[in-house]
Image (cartoon, rainbow over all chains, first blue to last red; front, side, top):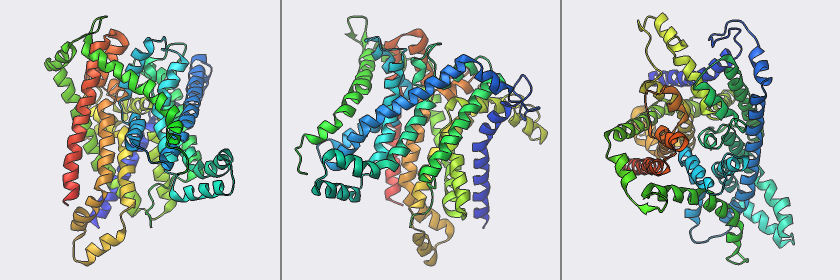
Length: 262
Length: 280
């Protein structure tokens, strides 16, 4: 019983710890003072208005969003055929290829960013949207690959074979049978991919310029030198976007990740 | 398998080509740069000697991996009880769902935003110091920013959700019947936990810990913001070389050192974990 109580106390404390910084950011973003005050003194949305009337913030939000969408799209184009190949066929080196393609998940992003900067330098492929897109595609592809692969079960395969046996063309089978079957994995993987790109600093920081900036890098550059409630408002806006994304994710797939399996 | 052996390679071609061109090739360039000098690229080990022959670098390596190890350990100690609570204690599904959302939202928030939150909280006049002063636990404000303690608080915050999800997933797959059987056969709850549940969740814990350790060893944003320039970790030295000093040879050597040390640590941890996991 005492252990039970202790577990509850630790769990609640940890949940509080998880919530605290986010509440603080949202709190200081609505303070009526010109410095960061928590608990906020007064209440205003002026900082959000100020942030949204600053074209450089709006441009950074736009760059981040377009970049994340583009990286996710390219990752899907690359990873879905790769996942199908791995689920359907046995071929030499399959395990190694899967490990290699998913290795960017744990590869230090700062090293990858540095490597791409040096490598891209040989082709003039630096500090451009394309340079950002390439790096982001590398780091987000594993999410799509893994979650699509997890949908490709033997049962899925059986339906696919039934479709071909009944005379479905490969394309018809793909769009009418396979795609609906892998859709949940595709949606989850794409949301993870989108968000990983949207919040990335370590990779983007090498290829951004004052005119081509993503929102996390812009915030990072600001926070190191000055902090004011406008930055809190921009940070708060990113938290709100994530909350919306997570709720959509929850409604789509049900984020009940930790129920006991029977 | 009616189609030819060529089919999988055609489907993999785009992914493999992209991966080779923009992951393997750039990384090969870094390795070559770390081993050569000058425009004619003569082979040299000078950059590695410069990194490993200098006490300052060893201090940085030590700090980097001490922070990574402590982050992993603290995340485990805090994360396992939360995973247990979510999987075994919470009865009300809606509350568990809310807790999982609470776990995922920080994970999906940029490191920069989360670290910014801690910069506000841990300042000299921040909420943490104020509360500690008011409750009389301390007399003078504690210095968090610019100390390893501050970096640790921020790093555990960033990486804890990974452990909770990994341990929670492992726990959810353990059939409660095992625990009942252990209890019926006379084992105390404590013995049941240490001899039945913990070994069964070990693989999940190990893979979660390896991920956390790797991410902690290479983290850049959190240490850069919470160190206040007073403490350096390897990733900060690497960034400096590539962003302002432009010494790609020396930067390459630092990158390779970070990777090799991380791999060695992970290998050691995996070996220790395997021995423990196999002989509960």
